[in-house]
Length: 493
Ligand code: MN
Image 1: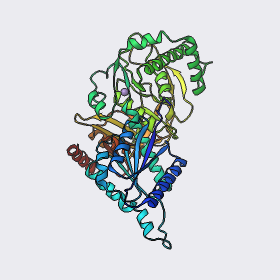
Image 2: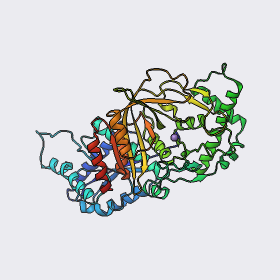
Image 3: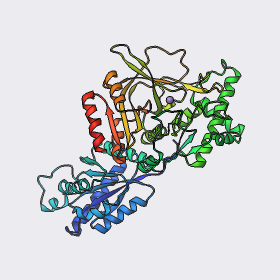
Image 4: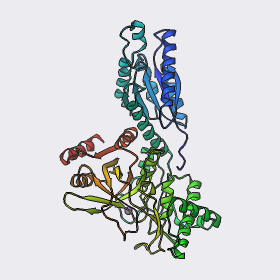
C-alpha cells in the first residue's frame, strides 16, 4: 500500500470540577479502560487516551494540540459526567480535526440492586452527552454521533468506519495528484476548480509535462526493469511460450514506465496521478499495465487528466486499506439493455485495478485503436462478483458533489474472447432505469471510483467530515424523491 501516514485518534473525556477527587479518579480509570478495550478491538488505528478535561482552558489546549499533531487524525469525545458546554466553546471553535461524539456509558446495565446517588453522580453520559450535542449542534460543528455501549461490536464497527473515512480525509489534506497532461480535449466533467478543491479537501493538482517523465525513463536501469517484470510475473499470469518477443519487450516498456512514474511521483510527493493518451510525446506506449500495477499498490489513478477521480480512487484505497476487496478507477462503458436483465459493463481503455479481479489477471499485449502509439501491455480480467459501489465526484460550480450508486457485480454469462481489457459487469440498484436516470439527473460523471471493499456508510462519513454533498442511489431510490433531494440540496449548499 502506497504510504499511509501513521495516524491515531485521541479520546477526550469531558467532566467538570464539581464532583470531588474520588469521582474524578473513577472517571479517569473508566475512560482509560474504555480506550484500552477499544484498542484491543479490531479498529484500524490506535486510540490515544487523553486526561479528563475539567475546564475551558484544558479543552482549548487539548484541541489545539490535536490540531497541530500531524499524526492525530481526529478526536473522540465522551462526557462521562455532565460537562457544562460553555466550557467547550473556545476549544470547539478552533477544532480542525474530524470529531466523533461517542455517546456511551461505562456500565452496560443499570445495577438495580446497588445503585445509589454516588453511582448517579458518576454515570451521567445520558445527559452529559446531550449537553455536548447541543453545543456542537448550535455551533454547527461537523461531527459523527455514535450511541451505544463501547463494548458492542456494532458500535466498534461504526467507529472503525468513521476512522477509515477520517483517515482518507486526513490523507487528502496533503494529497498531491500529479497530472501528466491536462484534462483531455473539451471534456467537462473531468475538469474542475483546482483552487476550490485545495481549499475544500486539500488536494493539490500540479501539472507536469510528459517530457519530465520521459527524462526519468532514460534513467531507469535494466536491473530495475528486470525486478519489476519479475514482480509482474509473480502477481499476474503471462503465457511466455505463446507470446512473441515483441510482447515481452512491451511488458519491459511498461516496467520502465512504472519505475519512472514511481520515482517521479516520490520526488514530487504525489500519491495519485493522471495520464492523457493524446499527450504522450516521447513515449512509446500509453501506460497500461504500469498504472494497473501501481493502483494495486495504493496509488490513485484516473485516465484522461481526470484528477478528481484519481484522488477519489486514492481516497477509497486509504479507507479500504487492509479490508477484503478492492478499489479501482472505472468507467460506465457499455450497456446490456435486455428487458428485465439490464447490465452495465464497466471498463476503461486499459486501466482497471487488478484488486477488483475475480481471478489472477493475465498480461496481454494488444493494439490500441487511438493514440497512435505502440501496442501497450495491460492486465485483462473479469471483476469479482458481489456487492460493490461506484462513486463519482463532480464540480457543480459552487460546490463538489459526490454521486454514489450501489451495485451488484455479477459473473458474466458468457466469456469475452475478443475484449482485450479488464471489465466488470454489474446490475445497478435499485434497477437499471432508476439508476441511470437519477445518475444523469444528478450530473454524475462517466468516470468513477469503484469498490467492492467499502459500503455507502464510509462515503456518508467522508461526506459529513468534508462537508461535501452526497447523493446516493440504492435500493428504494425513486426518481421523484431524488429530484426533490437535488432541488433541496441546491438551496442547502
Ligand atoms: Mn475515460
